[in-house]
Length: 246
Image (cartoon, rainbow, N blue to C red; front, side, top):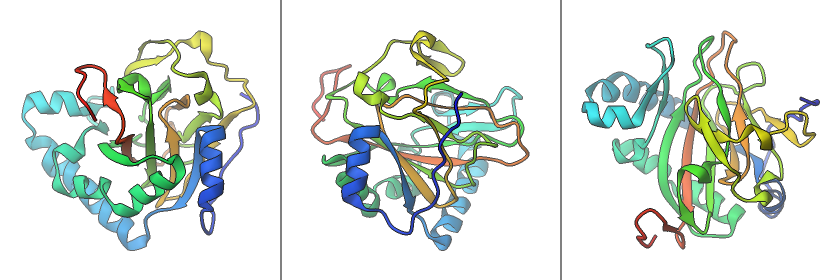
């Protein structure tokens, strides 16, 4: 991999420039989205969810919405928290988040998922290079994810990496990977100079397109890298699996 670019906090986000970056790169550093008090509250609810909600989920729901690391103990990720817990439904539907997505994408956002990517210290597993649109069959493929760092996300502990501009190539072939599906390795170039490490301080976020190729390495460091993602689809989109209108 060539020298990776690193993103640092910004005092404010120029929405016009952010929209341009989203169109050209498919991903951008969005700056601070949670103040210190909000970040403390989110951490409290994430702890509550992991310790009190997850153990009480019916087995069929747990099997679909919870992933555990290969050590059999550490929480890897929780999916569709917005459909299970009122707090996370309200969190994903925050108007300031939707305003940000609306300004960057140019379309009306509808929440479709809130999920965690826990990446615990020393055992956090890698995420294969993938495109989010591969997991959500929509027409058109207008998806944007707000990825919020709860812990500091660095190159050392497995920060997100984006192939900037890769969204313009459309949906690439996906093949089986460790945790589901990943882009066919024939289409993944780790020497590509566009490969960018997105370092994100706690309370700040990245926004990425559902078509931009991205991954994250394993966390072999002693520091956790918890991220909370809010996924939005365009209100104008429709699901292809059942033909239902958006």
